[in-house]
Image (tube, rainbow, N blue to C red):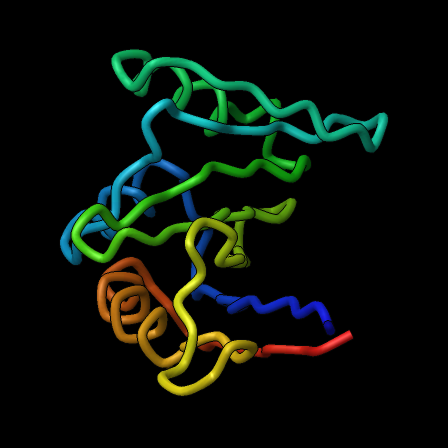
Length: 144
């Protein structure tokens, strides 16, 4: 059996904040995963995932958006409750780009056990991201 990875890379016209991005995505049913899972990749290249109840959302968003983390990768897990799917939203240093990686109940194309339904994800992610300056996107689904 082959393994697959899929992601959608987004490029923006201006710097993002995690808070603004999550706020925009809420318009199409996305929310932070409960419990809230997040990661800050510091200079040691270690991925230190943390989990906390969603009632600490404002504190976590403040940490992720702090200027001290502007040159680090930060990630939050988002979930679409109505569609029962989600994944990781990875913000790159400089905050002009981010990627979505479907890792929670990845939606597959009808009649396919392998291919990711990237069109469904783009349909729910792209319109709200346009409101915060989305300039371009690139999607891929690669078998290994």
